[in-house]
Amino acid sequence: MIRTFFAATALAMPFAATAQSMPGMDHSMHQMAEPAGDAPAAPAAPMDHAAMGHTMHGMDMKGFVGALGPYSMMRDASGTAWQPDTAPMWAIMGRLGGWSTMVHGFATLIHDNQGGPRGDSKTFSTSMLMGSAQRPLGGGTLTLRGMVSLDPLMGKRGYPLLLASGESADGVTKLIDRQHPHDAFMELSATYSHPITEGLSGFVYFGLPGEPALGPATFMHRFPGMANPEAPISHHWLDSTHVTFGVATAGLVYRGVKLEGSVFTGREPDAERWDFEQPRFDSWSVRASWNPTRNLSVQVSHGFLKSPEGLHPDEDVRRTTASITWNRALGPKRNWQSSLAWGRNTHLGGDHAHPADAFLLDSALQLGRWTVFGRAENVDKDELFGDEDSGNPLAGQVFNVSKFSLGGYHSVPIGKVAFDLGGLVSKYALPDAIKPAYGASPTSFMLFMRLRITG
Image 1 (spheres, rainbow, N blue to C red):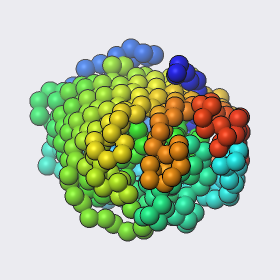
Image 2: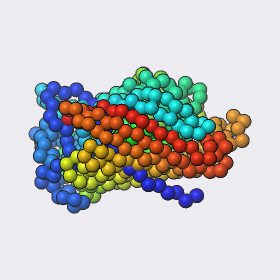
Image 3: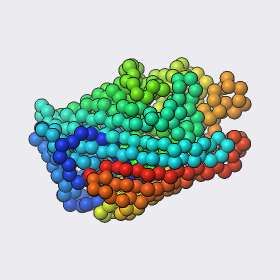
Image 4: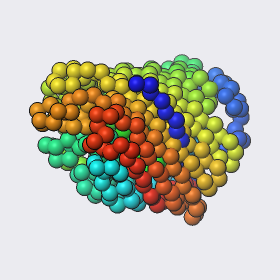
């Protein structure tokens, strides 16, 4: 089947505790002494991480630097993942004693209507609050980060989302055509980086929970994924390890290149969304990232996940991903970003011993108070009709499905926060064999209101 897509998405971010505050960061303000456009960033001079503080785009960053090495903090995304240096960020910055502090966050109220015979409707809320604190330590940089969510309040069955699959609502039944809620504690991590020689730094990262070096920056931390209130159906092929109970990562950063490896817990979070789970450190991953210009970020990664699904404990997974993200600041409160990603899960053992691919293309364009976004995905799904022992003749079969979403919202600034009002519509391309179950041409839509920190 020919795999095609097209897309667009944008806005919102995560959390912390802060004393003073300052306006949020807007990469469209070109007041920084860096190359313009797609020009490569100038080679980094030796940096004293213990004394460094700098200004980004004419704005005091309150001492924040790159968490992993000598680069702009704007490059840092989820876990140890990178994004383009020009990617926008909304946050309240401050100082608390010797610490630089930053807080992001949003809360979204959503009415969800998934069409077709297997669809459903629900009104629910998603939220995220993320706080960071950073200070010089021993000639290097210590960064602490915490991220929490009230998603468990939507219930263990999450929300309706056609073609979504992965994890379990109760430890017994797999969630199909629904998106699971995230855990209340999504990240509690510490990162320490230290310069080695000119332009070269080493770092270590520990999280419980945290995110290993596997896949692109998590969808909710990418500009195209922040605006869209629904999770991608390719999530479990690309970035589902972003909430992992037990992660240790070490790596090197040399100018625009990062090499890193992780050991982590392969098992996905269980159905108890409020607890901390026991680390196993039974899985591993490696990732190479490259930011050739301020507007581009590229990564390739591979990992081994030991028994990721509790319902199939005898199955291991090898996951390979590659992605490229492009960002362009177009002017004050104007930005355009697109991401293209591919992921492959190769199951080892059990009933799903075959490779399955997923492709994602998303894009977002912000023009002042208006933002338009879209996403296109093509995924090999083998769990839509349960396991082979369910008695359903379609169970265990692989079906190549596509989803296309388009939406937008209008934003009203209110001090250091913004109120967004928007919606989206989704259509699907399905193989004939599953149209009796899903309908010939189902249509889904979401309407949402969001309050987010802008700084």
